[in-house]
Image 1 (cartoon, one colour):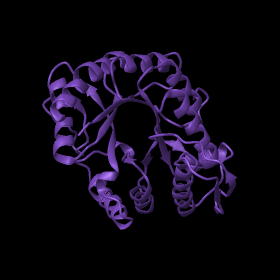
Image 2: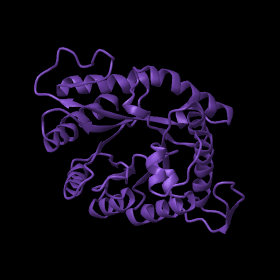
Image 3: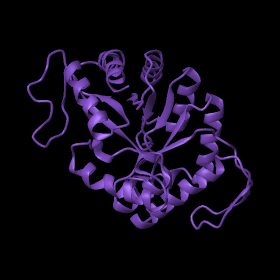
Length: 293
C-alpha cells in the first residue's frame, strides 16, 4: 500500500505559495486548499490551486472540497481538464454537495433542499467523468446539468475525492468516487467513521465495485510536540497530537490496522505553521511511508 500524505496550506498570500513550494520540495503528495469564498480575504480556490500548480513541480493540488453549487459541473469538468493538462496530471478533484447553504445563497448560488443537493452531487460526478474521459460528445438531459453534444477533454488519471456525510451522499460516494474524506475531521476511531464507511462499501458492492475502489483520506489536525504527551486524544476520543514518534505510531496503525489510504495534515498548537509543516514533511511522512511500504 502506498499511503498519500499531504498538507493544508494557508489561504492567504504570500503564505500559501511559500507553504506549497516547501511542501513540493519536501516530497509531500498533495497540498489542500479549502473552497470557502465567502470572507473578505478569501482566495478563489481554483485560481489559487492553478497558481500553486504552476509554481511547483511534482506535488498534486486538491481543492478540499469543491463547493459544487457555486461551480456548475460542466464548467468544473473543463477546469479540471485544463489544470490536469497544464500540470501534467497533478490535480485531484475534491467534490462536495455544498455546505453552508445560507452563504451559498449569499454568493448567488442556487437554493436547494438537502435531497436536491445530493442528487446534483451524484449527477455531477457522472457528468464530470464523461466530460474528462476520451470518447464521443456528451449529451445529458440533466435534470440539473443538461448538456448537448459537448466534446470531452480527457484528464488522464483524474481522481474524485468527496467530502460526504449523510447516508445518500455516502452511497453516491460508494457508487462514483475514488476517495472519501470524512467530514468534521473524523478519524478511524470515531463513531462517524464506523457508521459511514459501511454505507460506502455497500453502495460500491451494489454496482459491481469493491470497497477498496474508494480510498479513505483523512483531514487530520493536531499539534506536533517536542516531547511525548501523556494523552494523545481528548475525552471525546479526538486526536490532539503528540511527539513525532507518537504521530508515526498512530498513523502507521491507521494504515496497517484500519486501511487508511492517506492523510492531509492541518497544523495546530503553539508551534509556527512553518515548524509544524517541516516536521510533518521531513520527519513524520518519511517514517510512515517506510513503516507501511
